[in-house]
Image 1 (cartoon, helix red, strand yellow):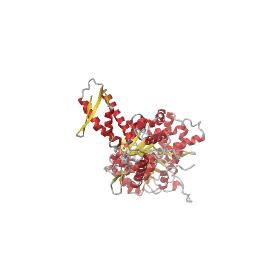
Image 2 (tube, rainbow, N blue to C red):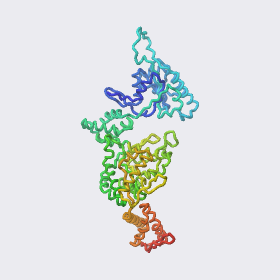
Image 3 (cartoon, one colour):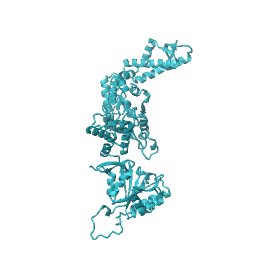
Image 4 (tube, rainbow, N blue to C red):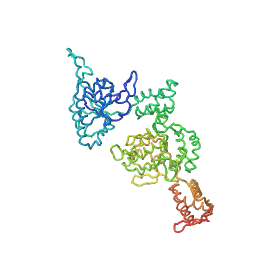
Length: 624
């Protein structure tokens, strides 16, 4: 049987002869694997600690916490009687109220006691001081006394029981005859929950960090837990082994207690052995329903290309690439080339190309297609995160900084809506240090905020947009146009991809970000005149629909007027579809609103645009 004992317990064994106090931090509320018979059992940390100390010859543990006071562990008559006799305890219902001064006295007595080996665990030690760096007088005396005791305490050998005759021949050394400290263990969430000077100024105080369980620990727990799932008894050895592997792979970074919760969740929801991935996903994202497995979504995606091209005109290549990635996401094949399971996002898209060609519109259309509402996407304008300190807004401030307990805008949004499309607009404008955080999202599909809460991106589609490659630096600090509307799509795609690679590899020095994005770069083409005609027609259709909705009024736009608008709105296509819309607003929508405002619409069901006139660069519309 392999040794799955956590490192912090092994370090405790090693350091007991030379260290009198231990600050135990990290994953202290998790279960711990402890040997039982031929296997390993998940037990609370205190139980695992007791089993380890008992093997070293310790007779009891005293446990103190600020809420309940002092108690003896384990709560067994012989152990309680031993500790009560040695320390003259007055327990009521198994506990004894105690203040900091009395606790200081108890610590000194324990450190010097040779009646039996014992340990003191200060549980919830993070709550002993209201403000670790601003102690009141009583708290200050308490910690100074603890620091002094760490330096003055000595390792002890318990006295032999009374009536034992002295040995004529020195006995062989045993655990009980070796000098060990009667230790004090401080259980804290973070080391900084204690005064900063406390552990730094004493060599006798050791730090033990309880880490998250490694692969072997999770695997041992998974073997025991999958036996609880429906269908385990009917499964063969290969199916059971596969379930253990998927359970272990899918819970990287989770605690053993979380694994137990996942198994309980699966049992209560009737999730079978073969569906362990669903149980893990449900636990991570906090949702039992999985939209990605709905039949209606597959039906929608079958006709997705036509729907995308109807909304985003002239971007056939971009629509095709997007649909391919979407199909891969729905089939659960994202990252399928990797041997182990992955929590990567369902899909990653990098939309690049000129301004106003439909990058954001395609993201909205994709959201409408998947979730039925184009407003259901989560958008972040990355130009707002150009400074390094703004990362605290996006991801949460680090512990100890103002506002760290508020979480981050991104992590909170994903926890609230794990099934979503997340748009990072103009990603090249974000500070490079903020971009580093996307490495973890793209690789592992998770991000931890300043509160220590983890947000999972495994059910989200991430879309980055960028204008990189349209203009480049000529080497003299001047921006020059890299691609032009007259260039073929093949030329545009090649040059834009080269510019994106140059930006991430050489300017930012972060090729790993580009490597995580992979071949998911979708390059949009310029708006050509043939496409501009379609875009303008769609915009005019929207104008007439809006007028019908707002005023139950039919707007008739004769062909000559449409031709005039086409000439006005498509003279300059450098700003793409957005430029067409801005021009249409100036030359038609604003003067139309003016003309309608002056017209008596009572009883009218139709108006016709008779003319568009311009005088001193001011447009007006004549209606009849």
